[in-house]
Length: 329
Image (tube, rainbow, N blue to C red; front, side):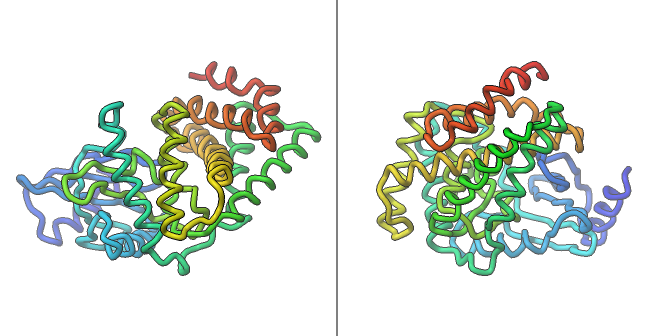
């Protein structure tokens, strides 16, 4: 038994839990781990967030914001902030990713988009960190450092580095010119649970910020873990645009909104590719490696279509990134 597990079980024992079982509940891309606490027919989730690496107080704060907006976030049942443990309500084991298919995607995405609209219109984000230029730049550098450098062993030439800098500046400009709203920051099929009442159950929201209106939308519709035909994605994005416009979230033409959406997706997916690479190299979580080709393909396709992103498309092509990634699988 590890020291963390002993601390957790000692705490549960002190709270009065008896005759329980603990089992892994989900794999996470952070230092947090989740365990299902089963007592007879009742179950809860125990979150283990080492306090020197994670900030459980922010999780509690955002959970409260979501629940006050009548959204389905876990209720925090018990807290042990000094040791980094929380007990939460259990939304079960039916993630969106596990049930999404051609028949279910319509109603499931309708619920997720409705919840997103509630987040963006009903949650005050002024007390959250800004998704500002330094953070956006820092995220994109994950792509260069962990994916190009550490995973593929590629060092950009002086000309390529200059081109990379121009790409980043354009993507930052696109993000900052959008209306700034509550941003979950990981609003996708692995963090949404299919539940009977108040669908979806929303998880992994502790890194929420105040940021671009299209960020969570592109996280959901251009999901790193499941893909849909481009025409369907555009349709859903424009459907959401109509709701956003009626609710005074945006005041631009549909084409402008789609461009925001597309370029925001490139920024997010560059970050995701860097994170997947870091998980493989630093954290030895190699399962995420298989998600890089899909995510890189999003970047390649959209950069080919967007006039100001042809430099990124050329960079991907010249470096042979798609081939190099597939050779690692």
